[in-house]
Amino acid sequence: MEMQIVRAYALARAHSHAWANDLWSVATEEGAWPTSWEEVDRALAIARPEHRGPAGLGRPTLSPAGWVGHLTGTRRLAWEIEPDGRARLAVCRPMPGPDLCCEDRRWGRCACGFVALYATVECDGRVTVEEFGPAFERHWAVLWRALLAIAPKETVQTASPIFDHLASR
Image (cartoon, rainbow, N blue to C red; front, side, top):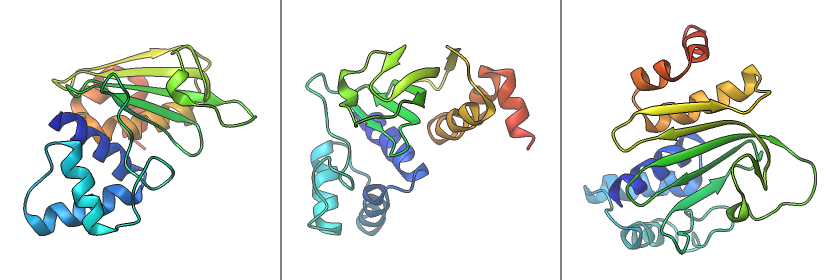
C-alpha cells in the first residue's frame, strides 16, 4: 500500500494537484510519510479541512478492488495503481462529449477516449509500453512525463526509442 500512495502522490504532484502539495507540507512538518490512506486523509484534514472527497481537489478514491485511479482534467492521461504499487497508464485521444466515469473503462477504448499508448510500471520499476496508435509526439510526451514521476529514468528511456528523442530535447 505504501508504494501505491507514493506513486499516486508522485503522479498528482507532477500534475500540480493541491492534495499532493498539502500532503507534502504535512508530511514534512510531521517528519513522517503516511503508510495508509487513512493517514493520508488525516494529513489532508490537518492541511485543509475542506479538502475531502474525490471531486476535484480530494485525493484519489480507492476502488472496491483496492486500486486508485485518476483521469486528468484534459482527459489525456488515465492511471490506475494497484495496492502493491503496480501502475497502469493510458494516454488517450480524448473524445468530445459528456464526462464519463473512468472506472468503467476497459483499456483499448475507455471513457476518456481511444487509448493511443498504454504503459505498465512494475513494482521493481520495469516499464513496458504498447502503442495502439496513432500516437503522436504529444502523446509520447504526456506518457514520458508521467512515467518519469514514478519510475527510474533509465527504465523509462529503455521502454521505447522515442523516449531517447524526448530526453535529448
